[in-house]
Amino acid sequence: MITLALSKGRIFEETMPLLAAAGIEVTEDPEKSRKLILATTRPDVRVVLVRASDVPTYVQYGGADLGVTGLDVLLENGNQGMYQPLDLRIAACRLSVAVRADYDYASAVKQGSRLRVATKYVGLARDFFATKGVHVDLIKLYGSMELAPLTGLADAIVDLVSTGSTLKANHLVEVERIMDISARLVVNQAALKLKREPIRRIIDAFASAIPSA
Ligand code: ATP
Ligand code: MG
Image (cartoon, rainbow, N blue to C red):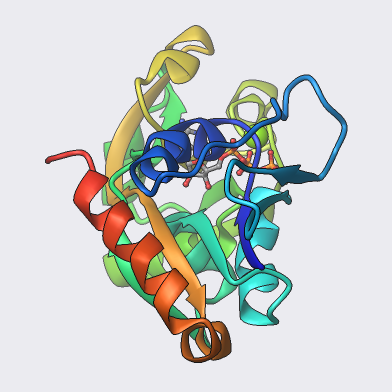
């Protein structure tokens, strides 16, 4: 049996065409079922649904043989002990700094002000501002980052941006692009040895189906 860990939402949706290229179709709709283990058209392949930030944990400890997870998750929560053969170029977005449209970020940085920054990505934000030489107080949030500058909780946020429409709807503007993010295939190292052939075939099929740049 080969187990693939996915998270619901964009990772699941955007992984489906890659699975199709490997001749694998998920036979249940995760938005309609409460099941956490989904069967596929291949009796030896199943999908498990986990929180986006739990995908690397499942793969690292062998709860899943393969997984699809954002580079943001891998960099923030650790990517040790996993084989990372492919940038799948799906779930593409960027990690950015955003502020209220009426906040003068450039002046605050220039004056050496201490910025209050709210984010789910405390590690990545700390590294980014340290490299820039900007002093920050980091506030850890688990979601709805856009709210922080609007309520006075923070001066700025560090969050993922794709179209920018969520920022716009909340009167925020992107002031720095920290890095480009996309989803990666991760593979358990022991599984790669023990189930080499079937896993190789999946990796090769995924590689052939990656959307072009
Ligand atoms: P959870 O819902 O379990 O708290 P999450 O909100 O991080 O986790 P998703 O919103 O499904 O889960 O995002 C999963 C991944 O999709 C992210 O880790 C990131 O790599 C990618 N992604 C692409 N575009 C965006 C975006 N605009 N906002 C958030 N994530 C995005
Ligand atoms: Mg979410």
